[in-house]
Image 1: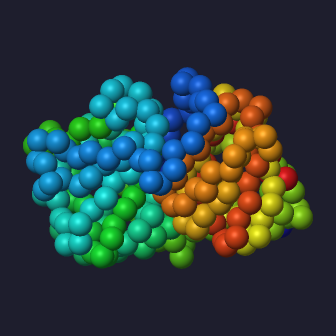
Image 2 (image 1 turned 90 degrees about the vertical axis):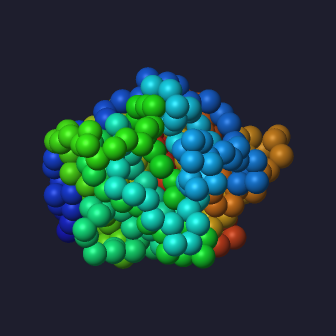
Length: 277
């Protein structure tokens, strides 16, 4: 148990040593659900129309200076011109194969379940090679803008590309806030597990999981990356089927009742602790 924890800690420290990771999110989350078929879609860059990737809103407004989570869909063969962003974003691949790197770098195609981080001001391209390509993007501030490489700058952060096969998964025996009987696994992505600090993890729920996730912080947001789950905030409510890439948020002390038929991975962004039973 201790050995696994140290491996995960070493990986986290080595990846994010230079990153200016956000430490808090002052916008409190509420009990809400956005199913995959109810996502509001538009264009990531409206000025380019259908030449732009499509963008789907999960929470927040990426055009304003606030935290936001949104989906991006890329057509097969898409490759952007070199560009920068004014803010840092973090992404998880949901479908297909995505590449995000310097324009002269060899293609590193990240499959579904992989994670990457793109620093503000860093020149790069984004490309897609699957039949269907989709990613979830998480930003702490906005607006999310695309700018010329002539405006590139170094903000002290460094880009990260983590293939899904390089993620370190800890099982329930290694984690204090997960019931040992649950068979739940988790992989730490970014942030700090100090009290009341912002962090993000991937949570792997086994097939036939029946349990609860209680949010203990002011801010809790979850995105289904793969698989599917049934969700309700109380047994009095109707159940919602949340296929990838659905989203649910929870207010402080709210409990999500969850069940799965197959293995399901969710991305959780929280401003503190949560318990899984």
